Image 1 (cartoon, one colour):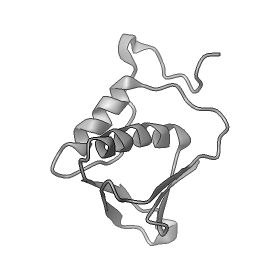
Image 2 (cartoon, helix red, strand yellow; image 1 turned 90 degrees about the horizontal axis):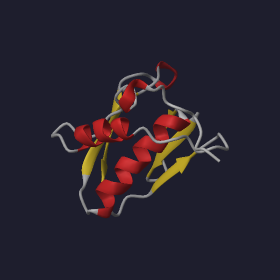
Image 3 (tube, rainbow, N blue to C red; image 1 turned 180 degrees about the vertical axis):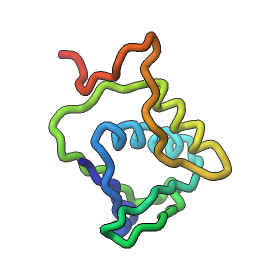
Image 4 (tube, one colour; image 1 turned 90 degrees about the vertical axis):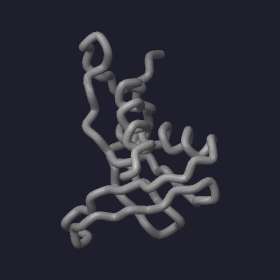
Length: 111
């Protein structure tokens, strides 16, 4: 389980695999200078509800991974997340779609 930390205070726990895919989308948007909203549901242990942050090129973001291996990238998932990031509602985590060809997602990079 990884952690997304925004501006040194707002934190959310996210599975390492999902966090890797979110990082790719967030980094691509910021490289292009495109600010966007990022929303998630808060766990009941922190009061429930929903949090939205405004992500912009000057944002201070930390991606903390607890696993030691980088997962393989599911391009279909990156595309699905990028689609939400480009919508008026902003980025939010969507379920991982099957990889093209129907092969299940692998959890590691080869080699």
